[in-house]
Image 1 (cartoon, rainbow, N blue to C red):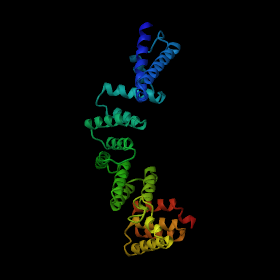
Image 2: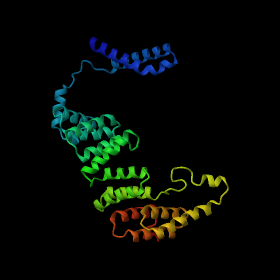
Image 3: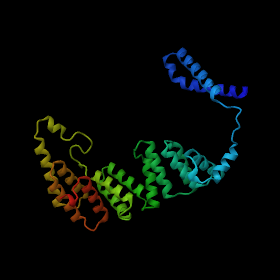
Image 4: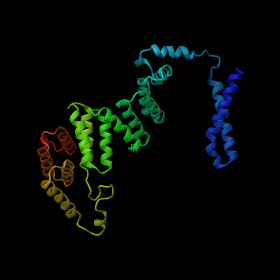
Length: 313
């Protein structure tokens, strides 16, 4: 009993020092007092609530139970421990590494997940593991497509071009680089590969439509306030916007093979409260890209987003 209490007290003191260290900026005495209070409090909690004499469950018995249990009956913590045990027993169990890596990534432990995915890739390169690695890197960097994430998604796409997630993110990378044609090519290619009722198909079409319908190369396309300089100089904003939209339509009528252009035109017309003209732009796009499943899926997604389906006409 005394030995356990002593160990618990030492742990409490170390924890207290760790917690109180940031307070040292406010004075060493205050930090030490805080550390002492935390240590005494932690030790007191243990003395009141701890059960040092209670029999514990041997680790080997617990692991044996986890190994033979129905996975669906285990808690998340137990499932994690079961996967860790599987990896300890077989350091080349890429399935266990992949499952554990996904769980860690989803619970905010991206660095450990990335290490597991890279370890699994040293055993065997698979499209799924590369895609999981790319998404863990994406989560770690708060949605930023870093060069490492792009490489991971590129390798996944090379190994399995039919996998939707890598293709989607590679399209996003091309879009972020300003290459809408390449983004469109990547997205329409993966959309053609997916079944009509595949939820990934609908999600990718909707996201691609949202991005491709944004203004391209004009005021506000880089995130700045549109027409800010013109407004400051007292220009007629309605006339300026109308002129730009009319110019876009004239360009598309002369060179209609621009999916992003038609989607941008429809969005602009809708924002100008011109639903008939917006619907006409999408109908022109449907005619231009008839027989191309990827393009028509994106056009239909934009029609739904802008509430311009034929049934609403």
